[in-house]
Image (cartoon, rainbow, N blue to C red; front, side, top):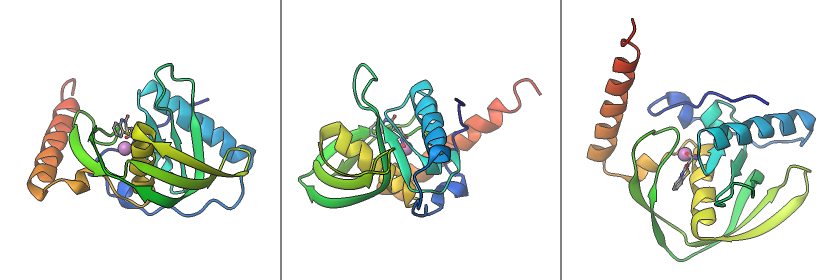
Length: 171
Ligand code: GNR
Ligand code: NI
């Protein structure tokens, strides 16, 4: 297994629209295991392939407390959305920032699992929120896009400043 490098806002590669996966094979399963390792080590409750610079439609999530309920969604498609919920969202690609985002409270989603089998899942609460957050990544969208331009650019400036300092500490 390998831990993958996570792209950070405002990296333009995070804006790439991911393409459909056509075969679910061992090579994909190895990549999925690397994504799970990267998500658990971060730690995070979800990760989209886009965030590790692979522009294919696959995401992983685990919202359980014990971190023992991984979900793998390949080519996910939302069939139904209901209700509204507001969550204080964070993102491994926007480290250190949390803001309220409104999303559907309940979704029905269709996808292929890691065996390539067609699955339908009804999700509520944090799992539903996380799947929507990850599906946004696959379309090149970030949670900061739901904030005001002022908030988004303040976050961008602070992240860039922080990274600049980081890279000159021992230089
Ligand atoms: O770890 C994460 N936490 C989180 C909290 C609230 C709503 C969404 C998320 S997803 C995030 C991991 C991540 O960036 N996935 O893309
Ligand atoms: Ni994210």
